[in-house]
Length: 330
Image 1 (spheres, rainbow, N blue to C red):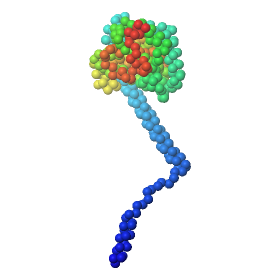
Image 2: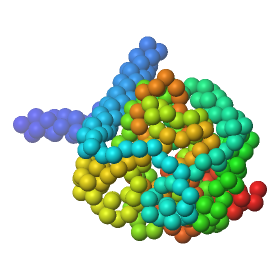
Image 3: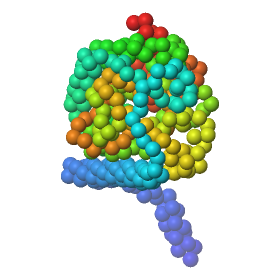
Image 4: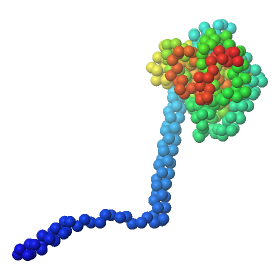
């Protein structure tokens, strides 16, 4: 009995002291490695496709929402009076303070407008800009409402651009000094292109309301702009707190502010519209067979509040580089 007990204990001791060998995976064959790489690559591709599809769906949803807003706004504006914007002989600063927009004729020569127009069209060609607005470099193209057949091109400081900018600034020198001050910074330098088939944008301000004006923008026509070419629509007198309150209360889709008389930028080549960025406006649809191009630039008043400063349409290397005074003295 004792012997049996001794034998059993020894067996238990031996069993408890034995440690199983560690697990060693079998060698990975080349075929196994290739299969695993294929699976990983397949999963990554599916994930990428899913992300692209998701982004495309989000973009389509945004465009559909914008189209719905535009329809509502057009209904609200259906009885509003509309006419071409006209040049005024009054003091530009006083007109801007009251109306938020003013027309100025002959600010760019035919020679300069032809040169910058050719430059813009070459920029579109080189960057393979297609009507769907996809695959565009953020360094070259800015964000724009209703992207179909519409582009916002950030311009380089090249000779045609500089010639156009300096001509405009000198032609408008007194008005720009009065509105912005010589220490105002150049915060946008770009071209808006609207091709046949581009759709109407929603009415919007470029700057949400703040008490004091911040940015003044100048659109210069590089060809005559007819009513079917998608001229810019302005609602004068909307650069103030009351107009912005009405716009918000109508959920940006209706209300009395959209029923006010509006004016269309039916301007000739070399003519301009100068406006307070708080003024309500939009690009209309291009129902013609012709391309419409506007050269534009914006100045920000010193120490003013510009919530869009970080995303203004200007090349990175030109940001904070020039003041109005620099360009007037160039």
